[in-house]
Image (spheres, protein in one colour):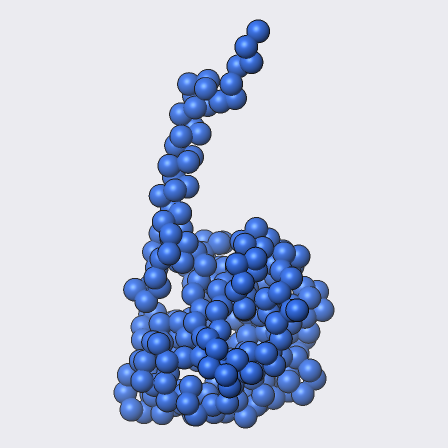
Length: 263
Ligand code: KIV
């Protein structure tokens, strides 16, 4: 049976950790789904790891829809969540409904994610959920605000900043989000948020006390040329791919592949 947003909330109540990863294409999404990943995020990190942008800011709604459709075609079980890219939801609730509506209608994904938990965003989440669009929140290090933060640095380091992040978590829960991504915040702040909200928290660089964990698939597979220190690689596909391509290249040059059929 396909995993639902309700299921994630029940797993929090039972203490069953949620396994989440990003995916941006058909083949990887199929592998993740077959391996039993609970939640697949078509993250706007696709801009950096797949499209080669320097930040997530240039990613368009069309690009998200294009990749989310490929993921949707592969996935049978996992819950699919798609990022709303920068400036496709911040202008007004109408803009957010239009963008999120397109994602749900055109891709078949079950939910959207947006960044930040300030008052305006919480009101937007409220509007989205009131028209039946499931929303996942994302607080802490929100990459769409990278220029405001002055880099990809840990958030919530002062008492004021951590109080603000906790307030954002509570506001997003009240507005109707079904889960929260907590990115690059101190483990004890993540723990406090996890204990205070009834919806699941899914951490990335936020320590061990969240209800689930998410990582960027390219980091997990070791394909990226750079990864954040908190991302643990479980393979070194960069090396495996390079070796395979070198071997292929050599065999083609030496006319060993394809083999010349014996007369
Ligand atoms: O875009 C993304 O991949 C994300 C994860 C880092 C949570 O938002």
